[in-house]
Image 1: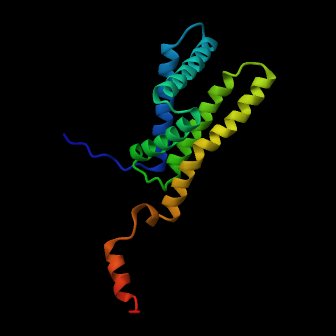
Image 2: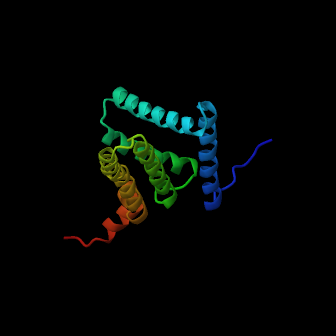
Image 3: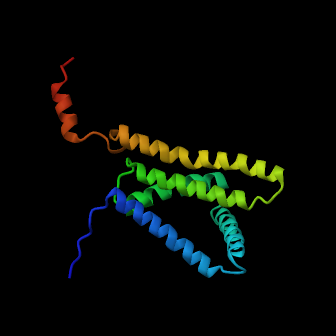
Length: 167
């Protein structure tokens, strides 16, 4: 039996994203259950920090560059899986949610020292700026100037050349 894929609506896309987030969170909670919820949160933060350090070491890129690449990757993957254009606001919203989630984990791992919290807050805003700049530009260009991404069609070029007066 062949199943047709149903068209994704705004509601079903949001449901899919929420369902995926809850499923991932439950899997992490189950895998890292140490000494109750507090232990799970601490283990999750440490693992996230270690993953980011590993990515930085393996790729040879600094964290600012990784923020940019990850943000564009999230935007493109969400656009692909929800079958929406990059001109849609949904892939951009997914990027901002992931960026704030990442910064929340970074802020939680800063500790209780007031100076460390101020430093983490300043770094968080810089990281969000780095993460959101390119996805925002892609959203705006795809939405308002799509011809910059795809160019003009040959029919329009030949029509424009034929209509141009001879000089």
